[in-house]
Length: 250
Image (cartoon, rainbow, N blue to C red; front, side, top):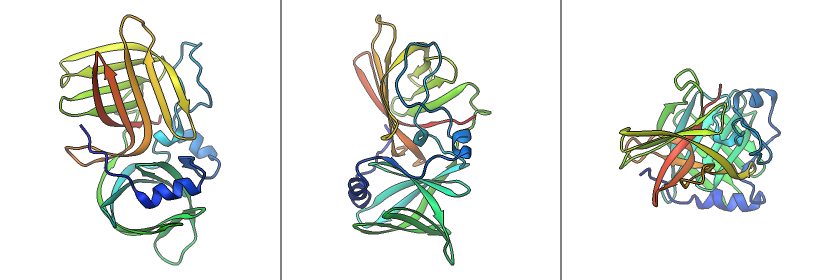
C-alpha cells in the first residue's frame, strides 16, 4: 500500500488559520476551468452521466507533479506548477497559490502561506514558521491521450489494484490481484465536498457493496515514491485497500 507521509504540522496549523478549507485560493480562471477536468458543486445521481470532480484532484495546467522532502520532522509535500499558479498538497489537503513577483526564483503566495523555490530547493512559509525543502522525486501528469476515456485513476500495491472512473458514464473499472480480475461496475456519489476536495462513491447495484473514498492531499507510492495529489481508499467484499490517485484532464 502507498506510504502516506505523516502530518505536516506547519501547514496543518495554516489550514486552521485559513478556516479549515482544504482548497483555498483565487477564483479559478478560465484556464483552470479548461484544464482542471470535470468539477461539480453538488451531488447529482439522477442523470446517467459521470459526476464532476473537485478541481484539486487534478494537476490543472501543470505537466508534472513534484515531491518535496521538508525539514524539520521529515515533512513532505507535493506540488504542480502551472503558468501562474502553484498547486500545493500536504497531508491536510490542498491550496492554490498565485505567483508573486520576486527578484530571483519563483514565489507563490496565498494569504499566510508562501512557496519560494530556486531550482531543486524551496522554502515554505506559514503563520507558524518555515520549512526548508529539497526536491525528492517527480513524474509526468497522466494525460487522456495515454488513458482514453478515463477521468480519474487510482492504484495501490500489495496486492496490486486499480480503479478507473469513466469520463462519460457513472461507472468504474476495477482491477484486482495485479490485473487477474477486472470488472466494470456502476456507482453513485454519496459525498461531494468541493472545498475539501473529498468524494465518496458507492455501489449503484445493491447486489454488491463497494466504496471508493477520494481525498485531495499528498500521497506517495510506497514502491516508487512517485507523488500524487489524492489519497484513495477502496472497500470491497469486506477488504480494504489504500492507494494514490489523480484526475486526468482532457
